Every structure is written in C-alpha cells, then in structure tokens.
Length: 189
Length: 406
Ligand code: HEM
Ligand code: FES
Image 1: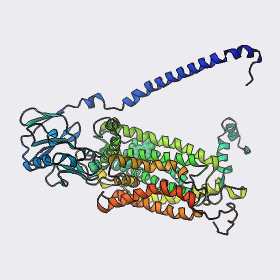
Image 2: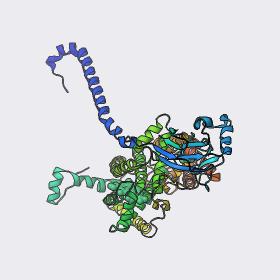
Image 3: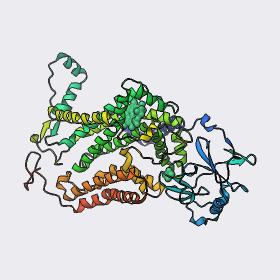
Image 4: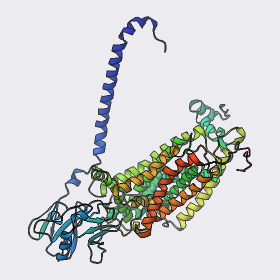
C-alpha cells in the first residue's frame, strides 16, 4: 500500500509513541481474549465433573455380626465393591510379620485396620492397576500367592492386608474412611 | 487448467454461481493419477465408504437406542429382536467397525511399504494418524454403548489408564467418569461423543484428501510423475477400479454379517454389565490387541501407558525417522525385509494381547514391544545412512536403467 505523502513529516515523529501504544492495545486485547476464553470454556469442562447428587451418595452401614472368621463379604459403597474380611489368626500373623522393606508400597498392617480390631480388614475392592475387581472373596476363588486377593486382569497379587506384593498394580488396595458404630456395625464413608 | 464447457443450461446456471461442476471435473477427471496404481490403492476410498456405512447405520441405530444403564442393554436386545431389520443394521454397525479397521490397517501398511509418508506427503500421513486416533476413540466409546460385561470392564480398564498420570491422574479419571465409577453419566457422555466423533473424522478426511490432491497419489514405484505419459485420468479408470474393489469388499463384508456376525465379537458382551463382577479374561476388540499387548508388556503402570500411547505417537514422527530418500520398499532391499518383520511383529503382538498375561506370552509381548520401537527408533534411522538402494526406474512409463522391470 502507498503511504499518503503529505503526512510523512508529522507521522515520523509519532512512530515511536504509536508503536508502543499499539503493542499495549494488542497485548491488552489478547489478555482479555484469553481470560474470556478461559471463563467461557471452564463451565463446559467443569460440567463433566460428578454432579451434586452423585457426590452426595450416602455412607453405607453394615452389620458384620454374621460374618464368621475366615469369611468375607462385599458391600457397595459409592458404587464400588468394598471388601470386609474377618481375618483368621494366621492371616493376621502373615500380615503383621512382613518386612516392610519387601513391600512395593510399604505400609504396616496396623495402619490399615482400626486399633484393637485387627481381625476386621475393610478395603475398597478395586485393583489399583486399572480398576478390575480382584478375586478372593468367595471360597473357591484364587487368592494369589500371598493368600489375599488376586486380580486376574493383569496378574496383581495382594496379601492378607490388601497390600500389593507382585504385579503391575502400583499401590495397596485403598482403605476407605470408616468407623465402628458398635461392636458389630461398621459405617463406611 | 481450462474451465470445461458445460452444455446443459441448468448446469451452466449453477456453475456460474457455485462452481461445483468444474470442481468435480477437476478432482475426478482432470486430476492426473499415476497409471501404475495397484489394488493396494483401493483401500483409501474403501475406508471412506466404511465411514459412510458407519454413519448411516449408526444414525438409524440411535433412533432405537437408549443411553441409560438400566435400559441400554435391553434396548440393544430390542433392536435385535423386535425392530424391523434391527438385527441387520446392528450387525452391519458392529462388523462395520471391524472391517473399517481392517481396511484402515491395510491402508496404513500400504503407506509404510511404499513410503507414502515421505516428502511432500508428511502432513497427509499425519492427518491419517489423527484419523486413526479418532477412530480408536470412537470405536472404544461405541463398544461401551450396548452395556455388556466387556463394555463395562473395557471402559473401566481404559479410563483407568489415565489414573497413571502422576498427581492429577485420579482427578482426571473421576472427571472422565462424572462419578466414582463407570456409571450412567459415563454412558451418557460416551453416547454423545460417539455420535459426534464420526463427523469430526469426516472433517479430517476432507483435509486428508485436500492434502492428497495437492501432490497427488504416490505409486508402487515411489517415484514422481515425470510426464503426461505417466498418468491417466482418475475417472473412468480408477473410479471403475474402486467400484470393483468395493464389490469384492461388500461381498466379503455381507458374508460375515450374514453368516458369522459374532465371529469377531466376544460372547461376554451378551451378558449385561455387572459392576461387581469382573470377567475372568478381559480382552478388548481385536483391533486394539497389539496396543493392549504393549500396555501389558511393561511391568510398570505409568510405563505401560506411556509405551502404549508412544506406539501411535511414533507414527507421527515417522517421516523424520526414516531418512532414506527412496520411497518404495521395492528399491530398498533391507527395508523390504524389515517391513515384513514389522508386520509379523504387529500380528504377534495381536496374539499376545488376546492371551492371558502369563508365562511365555509375557516374554513374547516384551520382545515384540522392544522390536516394534527398535524398528522405528533405531533401525529406520540407521538404514537411511547405510542401506544401498537398487537403481530407480527413469520414469513410471520407462523401464529402469538396470533392466529391473517394475
Ligand atoms: C467411525 C465410525 C464409527 C465406529 C468405528 C463405530 C463403532 C461402534 C462400535 C464398535 C459399537 C459397538 C457395537 C456392538 O458391539 O454392539 C457401536 C455402537 C453404536 N454406535 Fe457406533 N460407530 C461409528 C459411528 C457411529 C455413528 C455416526 C453413530 C450415530 C450417529 C453411531 C451410533 C451407535 C449406537 C447407537 C450404538 C449402540 C448400538 C449397538 O451397540 O449396536 N455410531 N459403534
Ligand atoms: S486391573 Fe488388576 S492387574 Fe490390571
């Protein structure tokens, strides 16, 4: 494009100032556009999060009086299977005697049960690898090489404390928040 | 390029206002195509046809499908039993996905063999890999919709892949699910996205074709077009050849749809989803098996996920890993061998992915995975330096200088 010749003189003097002003306007506009874009996109992304009713899922209360020693039951908490095992003395002994240095995700058995309630193990029955449900709840099930649970999906072995011992899973089976309401009633969540 | 003269007055009236007829004529008739394309060049148009099959059958299915955990399984059964020709439409859609992948995988290996990813077709290739990724996402989410056991557990395992991301992984997975497990919100959003993505694919396909028409098709010799004698018009020569290929494809496709519609599926998916029981063997659809094998080959969770995504990511940079200026494997004696080994390796990985991750299968998956990456990251760059190619022909229509006929 051709410059208008008559303006050349005055124009030159203004150039520095104009450029600075332009840069400022340009950046200010850009910044506002960026803020506006984020503000517009955010509700759409946030919309995909669990809705209030999903979050408000009530806690689960379980009466474990009928679970005999050596037995396990599965209850549903937040849509996830939750394992409650009434451990035998041998299982407790196995869980407590492990050298913590041998564990991929070191955690003492005492930290995974309530004080004085070592016979009750309460864990979320979702494999920490990719979310399958480990076997070991039913009598005939394979329990893996450590007498606890075995995840058939990609071969993770959990011990009698629900800790990962071998296989691709990176972490122990999670212990959900729970409390004993009375001797035989557990409230999960 | 001369504007063609149309005699029909209506055509001329439209052409004057919207030049669609000269565009069609340009793309189909004047568009010069190498005269030596073989049947491997049928698979691009076949893939386009598959996309149309999927969109048409999918839209009809969605008119009877219900995206709700309590009704989805039953609504698909209703489509199969009560809806007129519902069984046919569903089997077309189900097997159409498999055939789409067969066609696209052949199309990709064609590109690998003839070096179609090399300059000036890098972007064309990259758009193709984008389409592959979108197809995988679409097929994965579609497989969740019938809400069978494999649907549910496949969705659980695959979405959990993202939990491998350090720190924010768990949050991302909850966000993907819209809950604490794969559940109704998950099914609903998957249906929505499964409906949308094929149209996104159609958009990328248009770009893919625009990039193709910029420099035209590669050809079995992998050399550039030198003169007019090297080319023939696309129409009628290749339109007819494509139609013939389509006929063969439809014959095989409809034979499978009619006589073995569940051959490529998994019986567990006819059991309704049960969030409390994982089936003993979870296997993805066959077209994901090689990637699944790579995922399981790595003993570390994050490592496995990275390796699996890297297996596709490496295709994006392939044009820069393969430094050889020669395109076609016909003139690359060592690459020729490596190509077939890579193909065998991918098939081996496919078998490993279908087997339980135990014993020999773990070993084979690991070897297969290492070789897969070695092919792209080590062998191809080295070949570019050390391989001695065979003399190229002077042009598509002239014999080669050393007398090797093409
Ligand atoms: C790239 C194209 C597409 C691919 C690869 C694809 C793939 C799939 C797959 C693998 C299934 C599961 C089939 C089964 O096991 O029953 C499925 C189901 C379904 N798809 Fe698609 N699809 C595509 C396009 C579409 C489109 C465009 C729509 C709708 C507009 C659609 C609607 C549906 C519906 C409603 C179902 C559930 C019914 C059923 O399971 O048969 N699909 N899709
Ligand atoms: S999901 Fe349990 S081992 Fe992979």
